[in-house]
Amino acid sequence: MSAARNLGLPGEPAGEKLIDRVLRVDLAGEYGAVRIYEGQLAVLGRTSPAGAAIAHMAEQERRHLEAFERLVPERRARPTLLQPLWHVAGFALGAATAMLGPKGAMACTVAVEEVIDEHYREQIATLPDSEAELKTTLEDFRREEVEHRDEALAQGAEAAPGFELLRGAIKAGSRAAIWLSSRL
Image (cartoon, rainbow, N blue to C red; front, side):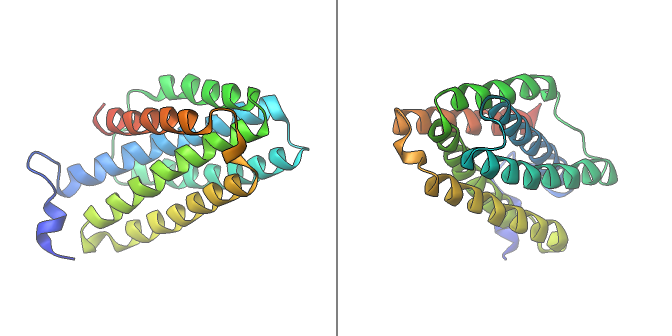
């Protein structure tokens, strides 16, 4: 990877400030994902095929969250100030989409995971080669997020009421949450 790519755009953080931002936003994102799945499970339960799939995805998200909960203090990164908002908003998004039915919950997963796949790819490309271990962790998590998207599609996400509108709104919200969490 070239050094120029690692520098990012003018005004973007580099070095430890970049690591701080990466860890802050990823901790917030994984926390939000856990809360989305908790909201969905509160509505759908764990016994339906969709509930069982969601419970599996939630366990993987909890493992991702635990990794960032270790990395943030190890690397002396600052968590986002918006954690209380993501606590409420994540659960509300999960519950609201699950109220549309299992396909609505799966549509939410598709939208969020498409954004997260893109987000992790950008982070991996931006991190310097000296962060090989973090890049490997992000790549492992990214692959699991893509599996979640693929499972949600297999579960009929595209048949959710207003799929394209729902997907677009959730993707916009996810991108806004990433931008805010990386800075606040």
